[in-house]
Image 1 (spheres, rainbow, N blue to C red):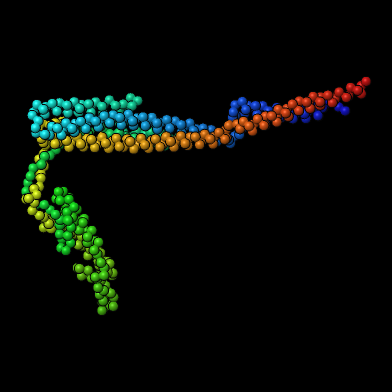
Image 2: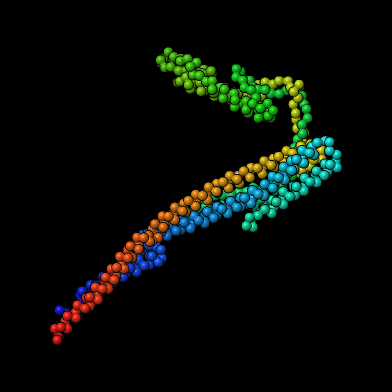
Length: 398
């Protein structure tokens, strides 16, 4: 019996210390809600969790960025909607002004409204802003929306200049038509090959290009090497094939290719240099041709019939330009809405994965805590018993 070293008490105390430490950790996990409160709890899990947290917070902010982009697009698109309304009214006024039942005073009134509407287009283009940035003056180009948690995950956006000058409502060049008799080109013929004009009202130079391409295609499509007869060289017994120029080739296809190429070159050179010889025309006195009479305007105007027609053409082109820009913005908005949905989905699933690593399973941890609590109480009881075991030494001293 010894009193200096109570090994039973020491063992009970060591086990109680281990149990108390585990109990403290369980208590910390239950009170914080996190399974990992310090790197020592799970070093690898902490590293993975922090990387996921970076992704989650980046994805959430990227989703916010995309939503800001949608708001910007809606701002620009709303302004362009008003520009469309203005242009539709201008088109209506131009059509009204083209009617020669109007007197000069009527045309002056229409021109006054056209001028006011043109100025309003310019005002909208210069003052439409989002977060202090002009959207429609041509300066909002090559901008990037960061729509990912990592670098260079972006969607680019550009909005063109939408003022009256950019839309072609100044220095308007137009034409009116007048009758002229003459001949109309209906096609081209080169030897046994012929093609019809796909657009009889196109410029003659364009018709020539189209005819050359068509005739070349016809020649290429009709090639057949079966018509080339094999020739025999009686001196050495070798065989060869002759093309149209009596040049010798080893195969019929090579002779045919040379003939096709030569014919295509002849077609190109002949029609390019002397197209009138190969053109097929018809008299169109009964169906008169029209030619343009140039009209130039500084601003939209209906001062006369020619000016009104030029204004109609310019306004309709402007409407098409605004429509194209609105269409591009609408497509980008749809893309961003899908981007937001995808980012939110990725963020949600990444959060779920991070939760499994970082968060405490409360039910499981409560079982662990209850076990440690019971062990701690048992350890305390055993320590008390161990401390009493040395009391037996006193009976030897009586």
